[in-house]
Amino acid sequence: MPNAAIELEALTKRYGSVLALDDVELRVEPGELFGFLGPNGAGKTTAIRILVDLIRPTAGHARVLGLDAQRDARAVRARVGYLPGDLRLYEHLTGHELLELIASLRGGTVDARYRDDLIARLQLDPSRAIGELSRGNRQKVGIVQALMSRPALVLLDEPTSGLDPLMQEEVEALLRETVRDGGTVFFSSHVLSEVEQICTRVAMLNRGAILDVFDLAEQRRLAPRTVAVTFAEPPPADAFAGLAGVTVLAHDGRRVEFAARDGIDALVKRLAAFTVTTLDTHEPSLEELFLARYQQDATTAAPGGAPPEGAHAASA
Image (cartoon, rainbow, N blue to C red; front, side, top):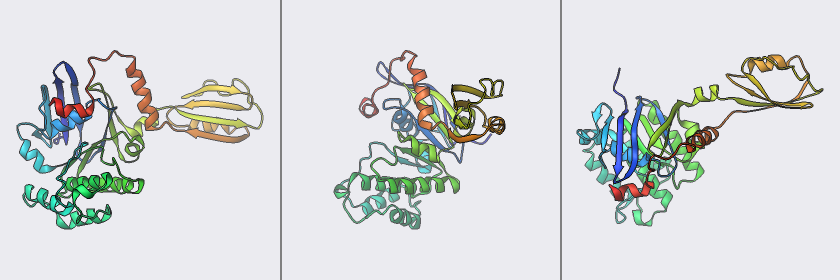
């Protein structure tokens, strides 16, 4: 089996009595656009910081591109682009000066033409001092520095924070292109619609533990789709009894609401026997899947909780 882009094995991190990561197991394959979801304090930032050796785990192992994230930290950083969630830049430097500095630290591995293309696409003015830039424009500088070396793996913590919708779309396009060109993208985000649009798989983290890892397309296929149908005449009460994968949720005269699993082909074929005036379908969104999974987890007592994301750096 080829090396994983990211592999976490029994990864645990404690801040004193607080358990921030609890025996986390996760494998991200090369070429994936992988979403890392969770509420504030779930442990997302802690996990990402361990991957670039900004903090050390209490127990367990983290491997990046086949390398030990702690023992081989310099080699890992040479192959990874990283955008932190709490981006802090040298305010007295211009955007261009900062990018040149980072390029020199990378040993000349930056593709200057690609860097300039990123600057143009993100509509960034690199001649201005960082201290003069808006939050959104500072974020653009952070995105450029993370991508400009065409790294094998890109780690992004809330990459579109502070960006307007048009720039969010441009960043999403850049991430798709990164994967198309052979890279891997791993990013945390609280913008579920963004994750839903571009990710192939996601992991849900809560209170430092992985709740679920799933393929979005497969999850949608397996999740029940709601179908609301209005008939010209009320159908018989047992008209849809025994239909495989279909459950009648409500039957109110001419209007019947169904839950259909694994597609709606069987239901559509049965509906053909009746005169249908309206038909509406609803596929569960990632937000609905997310909320349902977290509500389910909320019934389990917290094992100790996790600190707010912003508290991790201070604790580390």
